[in-house]
Image 1 (spheres, rainbow, N blue to C red):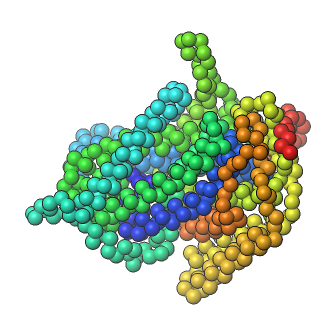
Image 2: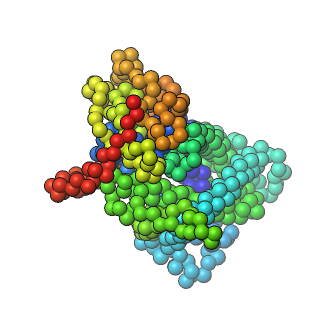
Image 3: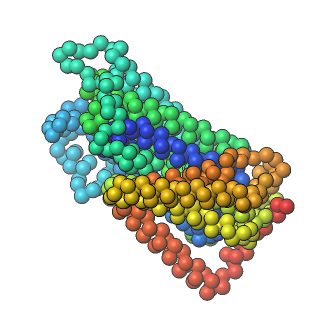
Length: 558
């Protein structure tokens, strides 16, 4: 969010207004994060939106959710690995290799090493290496990967705090300037705050890309099955993650655009180069090394989340059983350690390595951003469905089962069909408003159509709030989690207004993604759904009752 996208957004989309892009992206994330918090307390299992959709909407929507989550986890792991590879090579080239208008000074690396690290044709060898290291660390063991995650997270937060404070100190003029070589850092670099060539559309475009920075709370929910007290801890973690991320990202964007004019910010190493051109060479080296050290954390956690998603799907027989196979180690004292998804992690790691090595980042960012926005809307729909149209008062499993063995299935769909129609209209009107604003050439027509569809979205939301009966308690809960249905759980406030607002913002921002990314998402989802339909048809024709009996285990919660 800071290391990769802050410089890109400021330089290419919003200028100093990148902080507004972060704010807008954070608001959209918050509108979606609170529904995630409630659903994670209701269904505290691995899988996140996949599990929510399976229970509330049905298997086909769960498949669509899993496809988007695969973009979010596996796709983002590959994209960040490629970015790390570029930063690492840039760091190896040394201080002499700096951008200066159109002039590039000779690299510090020998020619043979540079050819090895940058062979061309979109191949990124260092991305393959870092993705392989992260996979190996996850295979090493849960405790070891947890220790590494906590250590790197602490370093990362400290580094971001230093970059923010250092940027503001340089820009304030507290440090004496060199008369012969004046520093570019100044708060006057914020003028104009929103450059005329970017405007509001640039800020919105930047916000759609900055969703990379706010998808961490979904990964928190995806690991709910491994949390000791998921009903209380996961919602709290989601809310704190959103607050901390939003504050740090906005301050970082302000600090970066104050240190260097927005059109001179490096697209590869924003903060290190900013410190360098201001004469703080020690800070440049420290920041560059810190970025290289902490950025792999994103790759590690994304691969971990991808493996947990496939683990959840394996329990519903939607992926081969190998993804759910656990391997256990025994300690020296004879006690059994926590198991690990060895085969699952190996497969995920190999796929991420291949994508990170051979597929350029520019072909991934729009597709992943569109997939994440669609996923967020689907989660909001899940919350509206269980609040207004509870599909079932029954769950799969029994009281004797462990959390890892419990799986859900949709048993029946109760409630008025009109609720489903209203939810569909919410999504249609929201997307139409965004498309009108993004693609209408006439300003008058753009604002008229966009405003009309926005008002229709508001009308549908008010109608739902006034005409549809909302459940006073959430029917979905696990008896085996130690809380039971009578205990108080986190509930999203301002329903249906908040999730409807989330759906509108998601759709509006999705419409500002380049049309190529939207077409890629449509093709990707279509391919996945048709593949699922084909496999389901073969499964039905084979009369495989084992799948049915495995997933149709009932936990009564009356």
